[in-house]
Length: 105
Image (cartoon, rainbow, N blue to C red; front, side, top):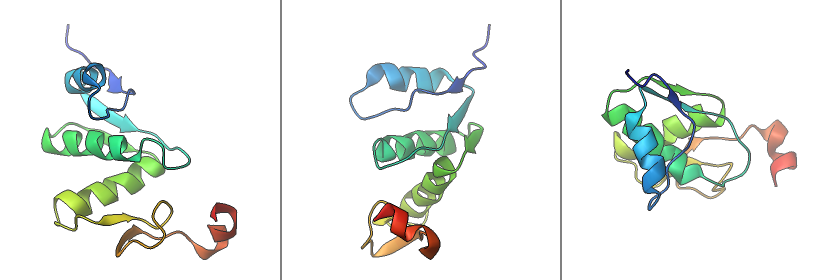
């Protein structure tokens, strides 16, 4: 029976079980979230989906990280990031709206 599940366990380097689950999925869903916990793992999961041509759905933060992943790995802008997580990034991929700045910093 083919695996039709969506990846919900996001990978991090050194987490072989998570990577195994990710690789066996037919698609990848990266949900929203708050804070910078797991950001690089989300980016790795998105990169995997793009490179393996798996269906991908990024919701809120997941879509923001898809933009960061694309800028880093396709456009070659290795220091791309969101100003939400790295205020002084030289290559802002996502810029936080002024109206929300007071609640973030």
